[in-house]
Image (cartoon, rainbow over all chains, first blue to last red; front, side, top):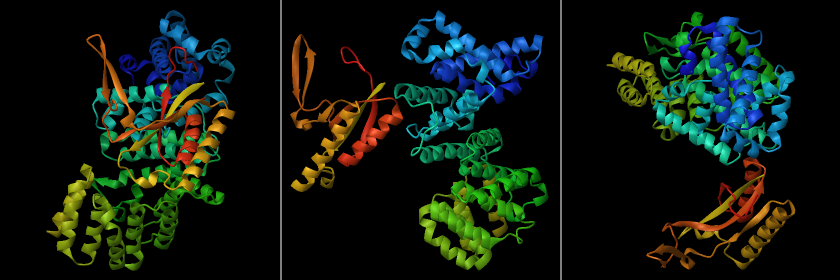
Length: 412
Length: 124
C-alpha cells in the first residue's frame, strides 16, 4: 500500500486491486514510456484517483484496464506539461509516440499486457544487477510492496532500501538494460536468475512471522511466471516446490519452536496445496526435462505423499538427491542426501558421509543440527551437545533457536 | 543506439601467465584481436579502441596558479590500471555483453562494461 492510497483506507476494494494489478500496470506503463520512475509515479497517481472515484461510482468492471488507462493519461499530461517530459519525448524519439497516440485499448486484455510483466521480471532479475537489487526491484515493481515493506523484509532501513532501488533503476537506465524476454542462447541462464530471485524471496519469507507475506508474494509471482512460460518446466517446478513447502507451514512450528518433519502432524498439512503441487510434479516428470527446481519439487512431493515419516520412500528420495547432485553439486545438496541416507543405512553411514562435507558447511547451522541428531542416535550425547550448541549459535530464526535449545535441554 | 566502454585492466606484478609469453602466443593473440576488430568494424560496432602504454608513461596535468603543473605517473596510484579499451555501439546491455564475451575470449582477460555517454562532437 502506498501511504496515499492507505489514507483512503477501505475505499472500494482499491487495496485488493492494488496488489493484483500494480505490477501489471507498472509493466505496461514502462512499455509505453520506457521509463520506470515515470511508470511508477503514474500508476500510484491512478490509484489515488481510483480511491476517490471508485468510492462514489463503484469499482469498474475491468479495474486493471481502468488503472492502466488512467495512469497512461496522467503520464501523458505530465509529459506535456513538464520540462522533463520534453527531454523524455526527445530521448524516446520515434518509439513512444506510436504507443502514445494509438494507446493500447485493444490489447489490454490480451497477450501484450501479460507479456509486459514477463519483460519486466527479466529486467528486474538481470544478472548485471547485484542479487539484493534484483530482489528489491522485483518486490517493489512487480509485487507492489512499498519501499518500507521491502526494507522491513530485508532488515535494512527505509532510506537504505530507497537508495538501493534508486541505484538499481539508475543502472537499468544508464546501461540500457533491455526490457524484453531474452532469446536463446541467453534464456536458460537468465530464466535461472529469475527463478533464483523468486525462490530467495520465498525462503526469506520463512525467516520469521513478520516476513510471511513474502511467501505468498513469491508464490503469486511464481504462478504468474509458470503461466507466462508454459514451455519452461523449471518455472512449473519452482511453483510446485513452493506449494509443497508451503503446504507444511502450519505443522512446521509449535509454540514458536520448529517441529521436525519426523514429528509433524501430517493432518495439519494443506491438502489442496499438496494436490496442486503433486499434479505439477507429475506433469513435469512426463516432460522429461528435469532441472534443479523440478527435482527439489519431486523430493518434496515424495515427503508429502507419505502418511508417516516411517512410510516415506527413502530410496526414492536418495535417488532424487543423487540426480539433483549431478546437476547441482553443492554441499547443501550433499548434506540433505546424507540426512536421507540415515533413514536407509543408519546414522553411522550417514555420519561418515556427512563428515566428508562438514568442512564446507562449517558456518551452516543445519549441518551442525544434522550432526547433532545423528550423534544422539549413535548414543554419543556429549558430541551431540557440542554440535547442537554450535548450531544454536549460528541459527538465524527464533523458531530454530527454540528447537535447538530444546534438543540441548533434553541431552543435559 | 547506446555506446559502451569495454576496458581491460592489467595488474602490476600480476600472474605473468595472463599475458602472451612466447612469440607464437603473441602472434596468435594478435590474430584473434585483429579478427575481433574486423568483426566489430563490419557490424558497425567499432567506434574506437586499442591498447594503452604502461602507467609509467603517463603524465598528470593540472592547472595551478595559472600554470600547468605536470606530475610524472598515473592519476591513480593503484596496482591495477587500464591496459586497453574499446568504445562500441550496441543496442542495449545484452548486445554489449555479447560483444564483451567475444573480447574476453580474444584477450583471455576479464573486462569491465560501462555505458558511455557521448559529449561534444562525439555523437552516437
